[in-house]
Length: 139
Image (cartoon, rainbow, N blue to C red; front, side, top):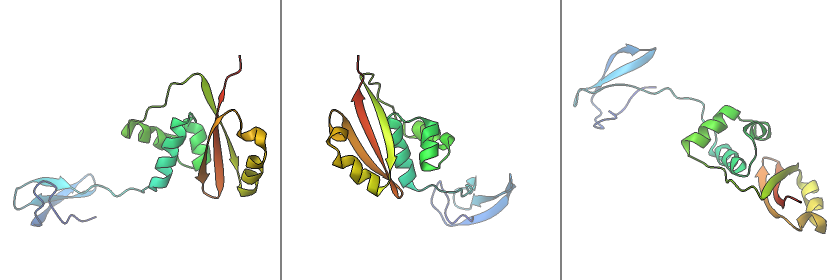
């Protein structure tokens, strides 16, 4: 990747100034600032970042999120740190979830027993749906 502007003064007057760690180094003629251009990594769609953080908040473990979304559990941990997401500490409820296709989802909601006595959220996971329920622990 080539630099087009100085990150310090935004000047376009740049010259090449050697190579550092296999990356081109540049010097700004205007402010004499030396810099290298960051590597362009594989970007992950923000849809997966948001879904992973939602699942984490709902109490789903990092490994389970990895299995559900197909993204590394390490990436999920890094996103949690980056965005400073805190999972709620509510011990009276515990989340349970199911992954259903469209037909199974309609059958699930057609039964009255499935929709009583718990909070519920439905979220899309590609061509499937995830239902997350909060149920009270029975003493």
